[in-house]
Image (tube, rainbow, N blue to C red; front, side, top):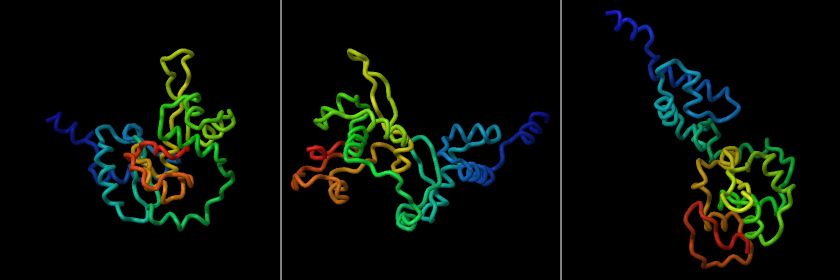
Length: 206
């Protein structure tokens, strides 16, 4: 009998209440939160994964949607309504061509060393270019290569995924999307084969 009473007294709240807790935590958090981080803030025995799945279904198609960003979750404006926010955005710094190319190389070839970035671009990469991308929280240092000199590698961050509305690097656009967005140079071959999503188009840096 005491065991049954203990289970009743210390049982986690029902799923609807857990949804409310997850909803409140995500709205209040300035950064995306993982299921583990949510579990640390919720009553013992709670199931944030189930609450996240229920919330994602409930917000699907709304003006604000629950999105997975890497291993974390956050509420974001629906992609098709992004144009409404453009007037509120202030572009304080425009990325140089070198920074855009360097970011693209890191995104498609990560983990990648500085020497490999320079080999792909065909020119030296200034320290300031990589420092800027790190400052923007779009690129971070990865593991060192087990090769002579143990060079550091560069990888993209959750902040990069969040900014560009990607769940993982596998969602990076392929050749067709890049061409339609005007991100391929004029010498890109019109009949080039479409690479798998997340794989670097060969014409990107010709």
